[in-house]
Each structure stands twice: as structure tokens, then as C-alpha cells.
Amino acid sequence: MKEWFTIAELAEAALPGLPSTYKSLENHGRAYWRKNAELSRKMGGKTKPVWEYHISLLPEGARAALLVRCGGACVKEGDQKTSVWERYEGLSKAHKRRCEERLKALCSMDDLLQADMGVHDAASLCAVQFVVSCRSLFHWRQMVEGYERPDWLAALAPCYGEENVSQFAPCHEGAWEVLCSDYLRSSRPAFSACYRCMVMVAREKGWAPIPSERALRRRFNRQISKAVVVLAREGEEKAKKLYPAQRRDRSSLHALQAVNMDGHKLDVFVSVPWTEKPVRLYLIAIQDLYSGKILSWRLSDAESWEIVRLVIGDMVEAYGIPERMTLDNGRSFTSKWISGGVQNCFRFKIKPDDPQGLLTSLGVQLQWTTPYSGQSKPIERAWRDLAEAISKHPFCAGAYTGHKPDAKPEDYGKRAIGFEEFKAHFGAQIVAHNGQAGRKALNCAGRSFDETFVESLTAEGTIIRQATAAQRALWLLTSEALRTKKSTGEIHFYGNRYWTRALNEYAGKRMIVRFDPDHLHQDLRVYDLNNRLLCMAPCLADVGFYDQQAARLNGRLRKEYVKAVKVEKRLAGKACA
Image (cartoon, rainbow, N blue to C red):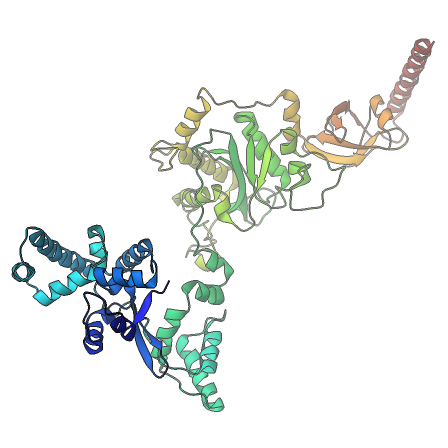
């Protein structure tokens, strides 16, 4: 249905409650209706532009008569109500206060009219009481016609032309494109410099008109969003930060249900026994997601899978096996010795004969974080606290390096802390970090990380899996897959030979061995590719070339081996018979 009407159409309809002549109706529309920018508009006519007015501006009687003549409803009242309230919400605080003042005066006048007082008398009384003119009161009554009383506040919104988009100074399209493309570059040139370059180009090409720099800056700020400017001038990573970070709720977890692990390079020079030059050590740690407690940690000069294995073992020994673990996508964490057998590992090629990793063998569900996304790992928040408590501690004065190359302190490189001393200092600060009361996290509620962890761990519904003696070998010894010798089945590993009679059955096959890297002469634990223990293989020591005693011992052992095989053969023959 039609919603907009010209003065000529309204005059021809001769609606009740409106001036009867075209001229008087046009004057009425110019004086009152055009103030409402949303409900009046200028449209092109046959010979010249004409004003059109929305049906909601008409008095109730005129609107009803027009609806009958148009053959139905022209506008939905719900949409009209929504429109005025949206417009009201966009007003400033001062204009909203003015709406409230108008509403008080109009409600007072309406109450007097309900008490059978005359219109002019009620208007005169309210005009004196609220210090307004009678004409304003009549105009406000007209503004609220067609609205229910609860909507009067929004309908009384003043029209000062704030809704109209200001017209910008005309500018040649080519010049505007040159200015925008020059300013929206990653080198981040100044707007004034871009404007001067654009003016030079415009002179060469004869572009006109060219507004002032201030006019174009105002237009740029109005038409180009901040997000576009940040993306073009500062990059995608900066633009991502304009979007609110996700906040994840941990209250549904319990202690040791889920943990996260990460490495962090410490900003302290440490003197270590294995090299003369001071180094910056790596901290590898595991944090409980429910409580925020640091469960286990180690210091190392490199972020390797060996140190990751030890940290996981420390946690399992002390507390138990978690259900889920969130890991970084770094090489040390995605190593096949840690997460081998996981199908969603987005690093390295997955092979069918890859051994199962430590976490896979323990039945821990793995979750990988987004690369270069510190927000994905809550432990990143702990690194900041630990940097203040450890790296910037007075104990580390002179050894602190600064968190980036251009943030070096004045005493940079003055000294290096001994490894054992730094390790003791680090351990004390971790204990203090876990025991600090007054934590504001939702699960902590003013308690320390330690108290929160213990309370949840000892709760009635908390069940934690503990490692068996066989499972402890998974992290105490390192895993390696290799092929046994085709003839005897012996294993050659790190220059040593390992063999036992049971290996004859697996000659030439790929095996997994678990060993202590610090004690390579101890027995190897030999497993198949499915982590089933096959045997314990002792180390075969090398002997001197002329060592007769060792030769006699080797001969005796070989005879005993052959004798045992013959006995087994006779028993096998009887069993077959």
C-alpha cells in the first residue's frame, strides 16, 4: 500500500482535520511536517522536485479516512513504533532530557483535558507552568497523534537535522581514489603527505574540483571505517585485535581433567656447566586449566621432546594422568615420541609404522592450539606473572636481558647466574606463584591456585587415573624404533649391542626400544610397534682382542644356548607326537 503522499494528493482528498486549501496545506507541511527528516522527503516530480509526507504525520481522523480510501492499511504500526524508538536511542543525553521535559508538559495538558478543561485554557495553564508557548504545546500534541501514550517520549524527539548526513564538498572521483589508495598502504604515510601528492597529480591531469585537506580528512573519517584503515596500514594481525577475544568458561572442569603445556624462553643469562658462554634457558611447564596451578616444570637450554617427556612424567608421578591436554604446534610437542599415533597432528608425515607417543599410550586426548595465538593457551598469562616474579626479581639484577632487543636494561650483560642457584630461585618462585592468595579467577574466588587445586582434587566426584609401574617406563625411558639384525635379532644402538634369545623370533623386524639415555649399558626394554613388551635385552659388552677369559665365557654361553635349543627341540617333537 502507498505510504507517501504529496500536498496535491492530500488537498485533493479533502481529509478531515487538515487545511482545506492547497496553499494552507502547503504552509502547514512546511511549518510542521518537514521538521521530521525521517517522515518527509524530497522526490523528483514531472517538472520540479516535490515534497512527500509519510501517512503517520497526518492527524488520526485524516489518516483513518485516507486508509479507507486507499483500501487498507498503509503502514504497520509496529514498524512505526520501532522506528521512533530507534531514532530516540540515537539522540544525545541533552536531547533526551528535552524529550522528557516535553512529555511532562504534554501529559499535564492531557490530564487537564481529561478533566473537561477547554483546550485553550489547558494550554495557557501549562504554558505558564512549564515556561513554554501555547503554539509549542499544540505542535507537540500533533507530533504524538497516532501514538499510544507509552510511545509519546520517543515521538517527541526534536528534529534538528541531526539525522541528515552532512553533504561533503564535491571532489573529483579520480582524486579521491588516489588519496585513499595512497593513504591505505602498509608504509603508513601521513594524510597531509598523501594530500599533497594527490594535489600534484590533480594538477597534471586537470582534475577538479579539489577540496581542502581538512574537508577530505573529514570525509575520509566518515566514510572509511577504522577496521579498514587498521587492516590496510597495520596488517591482518592488528585488525584481528579489533574483534573481541573469546572468553572460555572453566567452571565445568575439575582438577587435572584438562591441562595445557607450553615452553617459554626466560629473559635471564644463566651460566651452565656444558658451555662457557651464558645462555637463556627454556622453561617447559604444565598448568592445570581448572585451578591455574603449575603442576610440573623443567629448565633446559633447548625446547626438545626429551625435556617435554620428563615434564609430563613429573606431572604423572606427582598427581596422575589428565584426560585432555592442550599443546602448542611446535616440533618438540608434535614429535612422534610425544604424540605419535594421533591422526590430527598437523606437522610431520603420519606413517602407519610410527610408534605410539607417550601421551597416546597414556590415553590422553590431545588438542592443538592455533599457531602464533597466545590467547589459545591460558599458560601464556602465567608467563607474564612469572617474568615479573622471576626474571625481574632483585636476585636476577644484572642478568636480566629485557623482553626484546630494544628493551635492554642499563646493566645488560653485567653478570650471569649459576645454573643451580637459578634453579633454586626458580623453584621458590613457582611455589610462591601457586600459593599466592587472593586470586581473582572465577574458580579460585579469592583462594590460591594450590587451595583451588586441592579442593577440587579431593572432591567426591573427582576421579584421577594413576600410572602403573609398566606405564612409568613410557616416560622414564626414551622410545626409538629400529630394525633388528636379520641373522641373530640382536639390536645395535648407540654403538652398543643388545641381545637375548627371545629376539631370534623377531630377526629383521622393526622394534621399539626404551632405554635410559644416561645409562645405556642397562637392559633395553624391547616392544613391538603396538607397545607390547617382548623382552628385556641385556647389553653385550665388547672385549679385548686377546682376552682369553672373555672368549671362554662367550664359548660357554654359546654352548648353553645350543643345548637349550636342543632341549626345546625334543620337547617340541614329543608335543607333535
